[in-house]
Structure formats: structure tokens, C-alpha cells
Length: 91
Image (cartoon, one colour):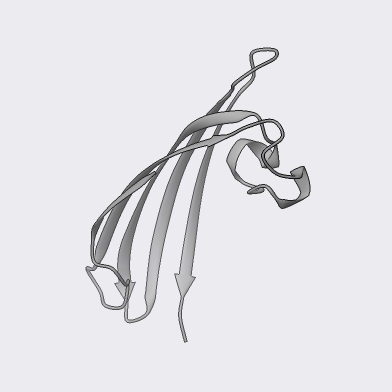
């Protein structure tokens, strides 16, 4: 589940996007090798949210910051919080 606000494509200076998503990935939902390598450190059996914000720096160049927080669904108590900052360019 994901909600996105702002410009649909980051292409110009001062374009912005803000997104909030919720993820739930069961223990046997996918093979670990195919799970998202960033969310929950690439594992399964987790639920949590991802908050991301993007801002256009130049034409076709933007910065994105992400906060990912996940907790285990079953088993022992295990939580992972990750912050990422990216500079992206399209050419």
C-alpha cells in the first residue's frame, strides 16, 4: 500500500514528492534471494513502513531520502531501521 503526493516525475528544479508505504512480507511469501534487499536487510517475515521524500536539484537531477522501519511478524523480536540518501540523475 503506497500513497504518493507531488509531481509524478522528477524532472525540474524544485519538483518534489513525498510518499508513505506499508509493506508486509510473510515468511514464505518469496525466496529470500528475490526479496527487496533494503527493506528488513533483504529478509522476509517482516512488516513495516517506508517514508520517502524527493526534491529536484537541477534538470533531471534530484535527491531522495528514505526511512525504512520494519519489525518481525513471527519468531523472536527483531527490528530494523534504515536511513538512505540518494542522488539520482536521468539522461
